[in-house]
Image (cartoon, rainbow, N blue to C red; front, side):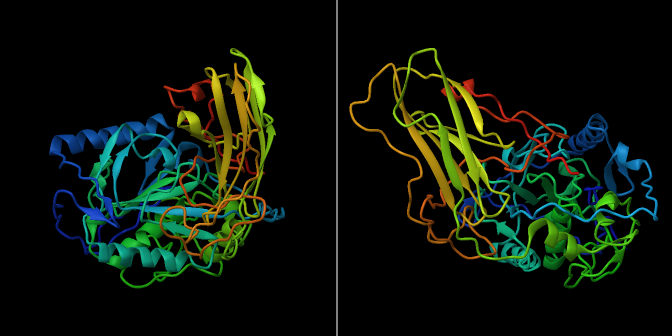
Length: 472
């Protein structure tokens, strides 16, 4: 008897699982994976599970989403998509971007929203105490290998040993628990509540419910499929394909030819994108992933950051506004950056491509205004300027465009599918955590407030927004 495996995504799609479900094993206290603590969450009672299911349904309605069959869709997506077959379809013209997917085996608190860096998901109605992975590190590594093998041809990086820095645009798959934790019925293997056709938003959270089966290949494929829904792929025919809507044993592949849709478990949500790569009614996984992420290669070039304002050594009086403005760039799109004031121990990741800030001058003293950019191979570039408030410098200040030693692995989060990186001549290269911004956001169809340090000077910042890039 087959069990449903719901996958909520672009149209949220769920997998149908074979009878491979395992009894739940209770984790011991103080468990770790990859040297990091695994979050323990208390068992939910039957009443709590029912309340969570009701909360899930109400949350979908509040967000304009609907559960159709085994898929979660925006209500607006239920309107049939019609295209005149006589009209030519415009070719895909967006440049590729690098991306990181974090396989989160550690669990932790989740809240409603759209930003993986802030532990948010639209699948979550209110705060959820999400458990970490309950299996062995050996099995976790086997699941990771399934994911890494599928990502290897593309400009995708896979992280799993620790949480990536917030300013790096990354998506995550929660690898743990069972579907009832977020309000779904037993038998659902994975879900993604993100309609993200063409991978327009780079910070999605999806789910693979690892307590529903012991089969490593199925768990790896489930995680892949949920991540792929958040990249914009839909279900297709072919039991050997990763995007097949039912979970079956064996190795799976990306379809590299135009393959018919399979709407057995719900609708097809991104037809207007798929039409750019295939005739109507079909999807080519490899063509789309190559267009979104490019072909894999090692990136040893750090992002560049140029400080336009303030100037190094600039003096301010109490009550004045500090205008910060930078230019940031990189050889690959998808990088991120953060604004920092090291003397105050403050930083703010950028989630909307922000390059201009207006800050109220801090208390008397001297401060470093630093903007630091990070790419998906761990290369770091920065620029900084020393400012003085109600005081005069006693000697020369610092300058931007300094160079740091490169990291030994080039990995900002514990693992990538490519090798290390070297320092460039005019930028810093490092793998330390930083705050970041998505350099491609230029429109807004989905947003939420970005966090600001409530206790510090950066409270005066113009708050960032989470934005979806507008597609033509």
